[in-house]
Length: 631
Image (cartoon, rainbow, N blue to C red):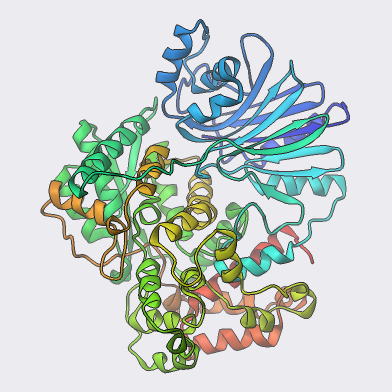
């Protein structure tokens, strides 16, 4: 796993090598083991290396043996050994044992078709000297990031925003806020699709590649998931799921350095741990331990590690106030874009500790989006059963829910009912995104200044998102909702968070459930094997019950967020207050000071549980200040 950046000129001029070097330095945390820069004509590539495979000979940027192809690459191709054997049988020769050279020879043999042959997590830039074309390619699910911008006649790319912002600063180009993206961020907790919060900077869409030639830039999709339907019964489905997961784990154990495991004790990480032990591999597991017992993963993780014979390392998340505030500042820097997902904090701490012992760790991302593990799926199915006239009363009834007990877990009864009611008036297909979202349109218009809110005449972000993703408004299928969450929430929140927080410490996370074969399999399943009002994650639970009868199958989903409501009223109160009442927040031109203060005070006084919303707003203020983003 690494960091990549570069400059490509469409006028034939040589890129600025010194500037590329400065951009590369901003990615040193992603690749602490080595660096390289290669210039050829109008193309300049840089690479920061985290050595995982072929430690001695895998340095980049790398030229092909024929001298026609140049590659800078971030990621891992897990089926590289199988591809190498096939390519050698076809006459290709190799001088290294790296998966990097496999990509080069695959492109020599198969051209653009080779992208579909890669099973892995990757983002790379490939220059084809013979055809004077450059490709920017991103993996199917968006596990690895790849940003780009067109600045005049130059195209600039990088694994993170920071090199692109530095490029602009050196060129005297201001970085301005993308207002439509900001509106979506305040609604969803993340920016959907390929936009970013900075005007003119976009991300390569997962499963696509960009081709740059003298004629211009084109974007093409190389992967569309299979639309076949699974024809077997539930037992056959469980067996196929087990076989695919086992093979995915087997491939992701390929490494020339030690591999660990992030173990929450939840369904997904437990299944991965079981697959690891079934293969006969020994490794250390890492879990997060909150001092607030209702948020801690330790109990289940200890059970699983004890039963499976894994060594367990628990990382306590119990910082003092000043330590937590310093940590949040680091989250903002390494988050790249604002990470409104508060679970970024424990992922950061877990990655920091794990990186002291291993360079690679398996993790459980994706299980909820593939097999329907979130409460939002159940809430949407319930909303479909409620008459429209009754749903319209939801926002009026929401204030009454504040009289319910608050609860001590991640999301208590009061917050669940309040969130459900205040968004119930939306069509179920749009409400699905609001259950886990932040602010409705009328709330954004109050919070944003008139200048920042200009152009927000479009409907609710939740409605726009459902429409753009092809989700039925009134009768959405669970399969539609899962596909929508895989395309957006998974790629732009979950995978972005885990990539930035782990790579901040030079740790490579490999989520086996993101193997494209498992993704395609999950999309072939009938609705009754996914989620409903009274069911969730049907196949994973079946597999657990079959193989691990001692597992507490009825345990409540724990989640991974910090106790944000409690912390804002306690250990983070003074820090958050200093941000919300700061001169920067008042003068940045984004937020209305009076409305921001009203929201803050309503949470402090217990009139509303809006810690998650306030977390996102706080992170955005810190981000705007840190990276000097203006209206």
